[in-house]
Each structure stands twice: as C-alpha cells, then as structure tokens.
Picture 1 (spheres, rainbow, N blue to C red):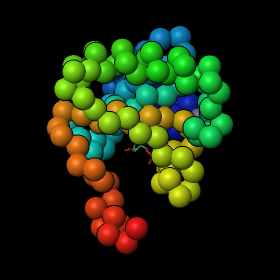
Picture 2: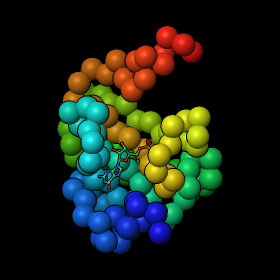
Picture 3: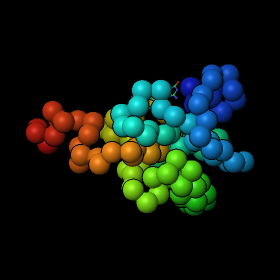
Picture 4: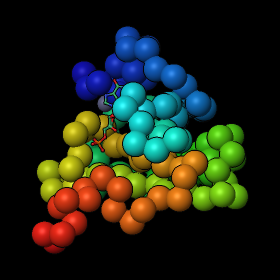
Length: 117
Ligand code: 5GP
Ligand code: ZN
C-alpha cells in the first residue's frame, strides 16, 4: 500500500485541512511555501495521466473549497501536480500541491535547473 493510501487509512498520521467522501487535503510534511497543502483522491490513482474526468471534476470543487478554507481563494495560489519520472513525482498516488501565502516565483522548486532548460 502506498504512503498516501496509508494516510487515507489513518495508518500514518496527517494534519488534515478538509475531507469529504472522495478527497482528502492535508498539510505537506515539508512545506515549500507558507501554505502547502496536498490534495488527493481517497481512491488510489497513480498519477494525473491515469486520472478520470470524474475524479478531476470532484477534485476541482474540493480544491476550491480548500482554498476558501485556508483563505487563499482571493489572494491566489499555485496548484500543481508532478506527473511521472520527468515531472519529478516522488509519491505515486495522484496529488495536487496547493501553494500559497506568498507571491510564488515562477520556478520555485528548481531554481538551478531552470538555467539549463
Ligand atoms: P511529489 O514530489 O511526489 O510531487 O510530492 C510529494 C510530496 O509529499 C512532497 O512535497 C513531500 O514533502 C510530501 N510528503 C512525503 N511524505 C509525506 C508524509 O508522510 N506526510 C505528508 N504530510 N507529506 C508527505
Ligand atoms: Zn495510494
């Protein structure tokens, strides 16, 4: 079972922000911004490439609720998913990073790599 499935099953503790029947939002353990929340479907999906339109539809509404709940709906935020090897996906369970609370620089994670692109 993957690490995020264990979080869904409460085998690993998490700092929950919001949840409903199908989705869970919790604080990233290693935040890269003042607000760094992970949004995941409770049902395991490997990555965005395997996600169904139904999952994405539900996730859209849920992510908007999360943004309102943590107060970044008006100030703004970045919502990203890393897909697969080249995307830098480390946890193979679909998740979106919601980053906010600061004006995000364009390339916040790979400042050095940026130059070699
Ligand atoms: P990825 O690189 O796969 O897009 O992002 C994985 C994210 O999961 C990273 O930002 C990392 O900090 C976070 N993470 C990894 N393990 C845990 C954990 O056990 N709990 C929480 N809350 N976040 C985790
Ligand atoms: Zn999983």
